[in-house]
Length: 274
Image (tube, rainbow, N blue to C red; front, side, top):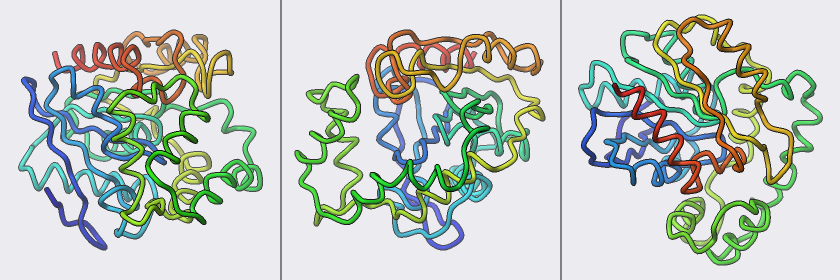
């Protein structure tokens, strides 16, 4: 379906399942296809392509609060007074913003390797951020076939299974019909800056919250976005936060984009739906 927002309309995919509705918010360079692995567990998911991504690539603008306003429009369009919300990576920050500003619309919150402050962000500068995204920006200067793009992504993400049809569908959704990456570089960088340098309001959360995090960040044995110790500190500081769940032997993307990671994320979501 299409949902009108400021500047255009969002593409929203509805996964019919046997649960109450769940609003699913993807990460900074992702799309609605991120949630296919979780949807396979039988959840009723509402998965928008955020502005600048996928079939919403034509909608200009960026920013955590802008995305939160957009997904609020999605709830309104579906006439849902409230929903459980799950957000992965940047989607977690969007979900936190939504839950803090509109707590009556979020009955429970699931944060997947995002939404809470990352220690690495404290050492980031705008210059380092630009350098970190240089490969992604360069990739937008050329055209790709679906097979070429998948091969590169499988090299960059050694834990994904390139034979998984969900993987192929996910990365194919990044491309236009003529093989260009849909996500504009300026949108990617602007959203990343808002995540890293923006003020998080996580300590203002009042809705029941679950937190799932990965053992690694970008492949085996890499330092995680969140350590077990940091997760415990969040648990102690935030009364509404349930016991954090660590997913062993997956990285950031693998929390959702692998069968094993999605199974743990689905377990947390099922618990939140109760």
